[in-house]
Length: 394
Image (cartoon, rainbow, N blue to C red; front, side, top):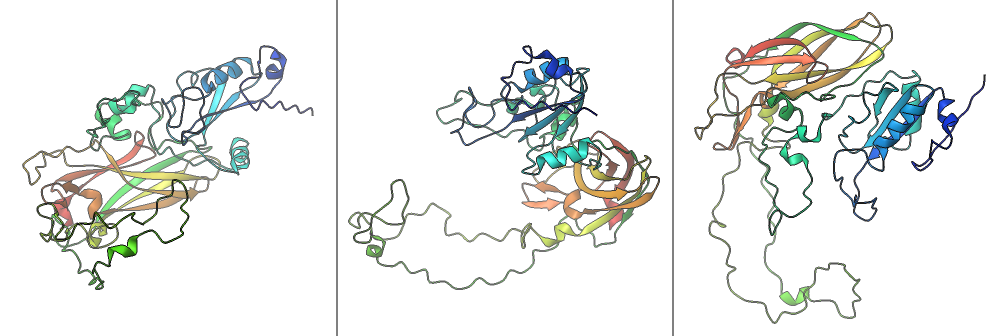
């Protein structure tokens, strides 16, 4: 057996000068990237943050050239800090696979080799949507090259409609949807069952738990001269120190705090513990299903649970109709299944999973109505659907 490996550590090796090097290969790998930095390492007009959502440093052109000249399949490995538009080459006949590796670290080579050559069955899923066009992400997807005001402003008017929720709202077809991923085997979901859990009726979470009394601290103000620079102190350049230069300009008397500063504010009923009111995490329902490995290889499958809010209008405390996304991810789990075997999937829906934030009440509100429960393998690959009524929960 004859083995030949050609390594091109940069994009500047002209394949046109050595066409046989690519044509003689049984398999070609192309590594492209799109990263962000701190501003001190620049490439052309990329000073730090990405200027757009395309591959950097001629990556797209490199894939096109290698795919056209390689004697075998071309596999593209993407190292990126976020979504990258792949449309310039994704449909080329020579490109047979794309591995979205993100930032895998020092074991990148071993991990990629294990997946590509079948030692490990891949089970990763996209944590964002790969669009066909940069504009598909919405008006806020473009970088601001020039100030739009004396102090540049970016208004986050998209609300909840970020990534897959924006794509669903505007019925935009992505290249690869949120939650997408491939495996060397196949899976099937069946027998969806939704089990409501008995609890006391309330559209609002339980009363905030009592907080621990904070310790009493000495709030007396020390002599201002204690904050002066120490004698013979050598300060480092550009280092910020907690000292003052003089006490001559210190004013005495009551500090002019803004109006309302001394008015005691009630504790938020949405708080009370790490992550908010503990009752927000009370399970209200259990979603169960059967997951079968219908292929010939063992593998892991990521089962994703989405919900759609009631279709009947929901009015908040301010009299506004609440705008809900088409669907929202609420839980997921990765399960290992051997060929032709079946395992049970069990995922919980909590009070917070089914609630929305009411600005007027400053609390989470559980709306009344029928929720659609969706179980699948991505945001666009829903395998099982069911309904649960909040009225049946109480």
